[in-house]
Image (cartoon, rainbow, N blue to C red):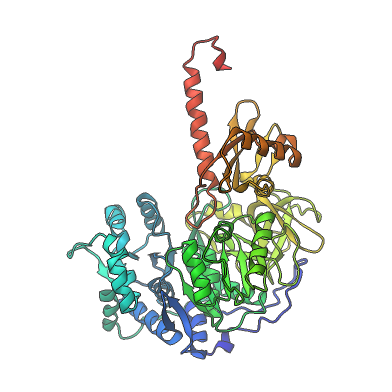
Amino acid sequence: MAKDEIVSSVRTPWKKNLGNVPFHMEYPQCSLFEAVKASADERPDSDALIFMGRHISYKKMIREIETCAKALRTIGVREGDHVTIALPNCPQGIYMFYAVNLVGAVANMIHPLSAEKEIEFYLNFSNSVTVVTLDQFYDKFEAIRKNTPCVVNIVIASIKDELSRPLRAGYMLTEGRKIKKIPEDAPVIRWNEFMKLSRSCFYNYAVKRKADDPAAILYSGGTTGTTKGIVLTNYNFNALGCQVKATNPIYREGDRMLAAMPIFHGFGLGVCIHTMLEGGGCCVLVPRFTAKSYARDIIKYKCNFIAGVPTLYEALLRLDNLENADLSSLKGVFSGGDSLSVELKKKFDKFLYDHHATVQIREGYGTTETVTACCLTPIHMTKEGSIGLPFPDTYIKIVKPGTDEELPYGEEGEILLAGPTVMKEYLNNPEETAQTLRKHADGMTWVYTGDLGYMDDDGFIFFRGRAKRMIVTSGYNVYPAQIENILDAHEKIHMSCVIGIPDDYRMHVVKAFVMLKEGVPKTEETKEEIKEYCRKHIARYAVPREIEFRDDLPKTLVGKVAYRVLEEEEEAKYQRNKDATSLLPEGDSRKK
């Protein structure tokens, strides 16, 4: 199938979304594999993937995907089955993702560093019949295998199998030595043996899938904070690819994306991998992220696009090895997944300018319920504090939280999303699906994000924070992201995280966890200086009652600041103090 038969032009202007109008772009009505195969047919000898210095052409990638698909059929994977992929950004992960799609199954994407009990939950919740992971994670999967009755086969891959000979030798002397040897009689299929099983499959391995068929399951806390499996379709991913290219007219086939965002994450899988491969680009795969290796790869491979969470850009600013770096190859620098403070944006924009880049960081917004990004700062204009404009054919409206009552421009409320990337459902959770996906009188299905924000009269969106992260203290609403922006602008503060902690009188009070810049003393004098600064810049009720200095802040698996971890720590501390106080005799002043 030729690419122009399934992919229409995406040259429609990036317009302001107003009202209930039909989609202005056409999207590929095919499977994920077919969309990528169409690109491969046009540029078979071009690089599709670069992994640890090894270049993999589109022709080679498609051949490996088809071999992998035949092997999946040989071990019994059938249309509609769920296959768990617990791999980092490596070639086997890409081959397996598209091979699962090719045989008509659904890819259940999970983080390989998840705890044993989390893995057990993911496997049982999705009823996965096959699991693919790395040799270094074998013990975790073997430990819970007896508790996962649906799992028939575990396929074990290894990073060394995708390295060139010189690198493989070095890997085995360093990282490879740390990996515990898997017993010869272990009930698993090694990757190379697995791929050879394709020889037993001669035909009928490819299954024709419709655009609306499920393609992947990604996991998120959803809008209520509990783990949910988000079912995304072929259409969702293919539409995202077209939208991303439409909002980035500077994109050209052959451009390189530094794919460090993990493939179990919507941004990593949807933007860094599928958008690039569907559009004829090249993915520079980063299996294990460190700020130093990330910086090195940008320069080494002359990457055109990079994407990450704010903590990534904050880490890059501290590196010495970027001092004389030439970043002129960059066409796009994207930030998402968390609020980008105004101060950090200013610092990183200056950093880009000082290193010969002609672009500035562009902030985006999205939810896994819409694959990933659905709103982005345009190239030609920006507004301080804004997360940009909705993607083409993506509609955003601001409503009174929990209702369908639309609010005027400039008024804060809950952010609702509609468009071609809206998920199919939450897996096995019709009640939560009905809560999150609601059809309005305009005939469109809207995602209730649980996020707060407003739209100005130019259509720009301003994110104010998660509704569930909002702190209510003495009846006042306090938004942590706003306080963090102010704290991060202080000359002695490197980074901050603000949460609400329990208080018997006010229900909650504001507490700030602060990472100081190098050399700044962690003294009461410094603390008082920060409090005085806060009093000047923050309403009295929102000034942090407590400030705690930390050398580092906890991070989620994708690098966001894990504010929930801090909330849990403070909740436990509060409960311990409460329990201890209850044991004191009546009349003791400490009981007050």
